[in-house]
Amino acid sequence: MKIRSGPFPLRTDTTRRRLLQGAFAGGAACAVSGMLPAWARDARVSGKAASVGTAPLVFELAIREERLDIAGGQARALTINGGVPGPLLEWQEGREVVLEVTNHLDVPTSIHWHGILLPYQMDGVPWLSFPGIAPGETFRYHFPVVQNGTYWYHSHSGLQEQSGVYGPLVIHPRQADPVQVDRDYVVFLSDWTFDDPHHVLSRLKKMSDYYNFQQFTLTDLYAIENMGSAEAWATKLAWDRMRMMPTDIADVTGAAYTYLMNGLHPAGNWTGLFAPGERVRLRFINGSAMSFFNVRIPGLPMTVVAADGQNVAPVETDEFQIGVAETYDVVVEPGDAGAYTVMAESMDRSGYAAGTLATRPGLTAPVPALRERPLLSMVDMGMDMAGHGGHGSQRDHGQRGHGQGDHTGGNDGGSNVAMSGSDSHAGHAMQGAHSGHDGMAMGGMAQAGPIVARHGGDHHGPGNISVAEVQRDRLGERGTGLAEAPHRVLVYRDLQRLAEDFDERPPSREIELHLTGHMERYMWSFDGKQFHEVDGPIAFHYGERLRLILVNDTMMNHPIHLHGMWMELENGHGSRIPRKHTINVMPGARVSALINADAPGLWAFHCHLLYHMEMGMFRVVRVAPEETA
Image (cartoon, rainbow, N blue to C red):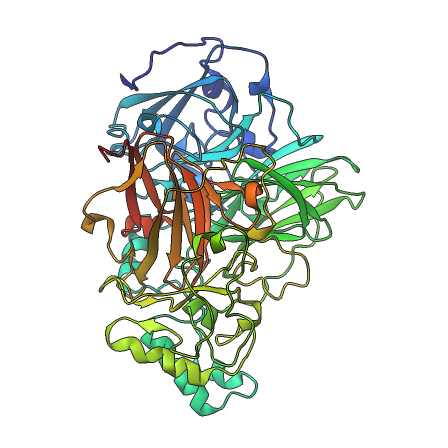
């Protein structure tokens, strides 16, 4: 066995060397779902890594292809230490970790530590931060742990993440945890397909709506109250020119996916036990490849206490949407009802993952029915509808309008949407078709955030089908499909950091990037260029503080992830703006984040929808002194 190490001297802790090999290797028989890693049977965070010690925490991880029972069927899966998901890793802030990852596949592999601040050589992105792990070889990751919270890890090699190379990660704080609970559970959400992920991608490239069985027809448009035939036809033709449908919420749906909670499908009923009156922390991790989830526990309020591993001011809610790669910690205080359903509904309502909080094993609570499918709206198209006031003024949040202070808002009654090439008339058809039907394909205006900027003349070339003519601040909007929910829903505007460590320096410059794509051709990019078409890395000057502006010109949500550095989301809370490693940018939205370029090296920057990244929505950020950048 070859071992290739990173650029750090190795110190070993032999008492912990076999921790994962002994505790997590292999699987455990499960009556419904077959093999599960040992931790996933109850998903309880043990806190063992928080014990006193100074030597490195040492883990051994082995990646193999194995046949497992998953979601009631037999599958060829890529496993870590015999399970899907991989083992729960518990680290401690202030310690060093050593992770020896051995590749038993016949192709190269890798592990990326998502959201972890570390030297770039340890980040785990093949041919960017390291060569990758060749078949039969072991790579030794070694770095200090400088943060705490809930994170995860996954392969960054091809489409391996979709086939099972992922797992949860919890880092215990060095100081007293501000969140005190009686029980602590991981709730790891993922999407599983029995198909070869390369076949899934091939189908999307040939027919982008291959998995969309909830098509919107002309008959559906006629059924909308007060919509006549002319309006219906104009609307249908406009959507056709967009090469999209109002139901294009997710590229891959429940037609191909089984949704899992801690490796179990709903019939497996993952159960977290509690005693009435206890405080229970649930660490939600969206480790799926392509799926957003709407999470709620009917009858039980949730208090959000952390986002992307960072403590936030507690905010009580009844539901939240979690984008791909995001994490949220919530605290609940179950009463004496005996059982509560933990419901994670896919954003497009094509399926769900579910489990139970219960006072004893075997108890269940009713599982809510899937709600009505959501539909895209004119707001998602980036339209500015004449005659709908209240959305044209730029909102002043004391931060130059989230970095958009140089742009003017206002409703000028002009074109609703700018289309590439010969499709530019589609927006005018939609303008004539709009009749104010909230929640339908033409509606959503009542929930729209303020217009903060307008698009320039660059349509970003043939790799982009449309642009958001008007760009909105949507940080106060509920996630897709949740506008009409009859209860409280978390929005990005609710998040405020707890730490007293805000950098008061103003940004020295701004970088603006547009999220672009062509759904019909299944091409995804930044500024209309796929990764293979760009000239070179995005230059961050080492030591600078900059503002990154992201504009979503597509009609899909994009969870954007920056490796190695925090993005401080400018959501209107001044020195309390939250840190995030992944920011979901809603369709037609403009968001900005402050970044301290304090991590020299080459870093990945990409959409965390796996197939979007694979098809070109990926860039490299180079952090270096200005004179060499």
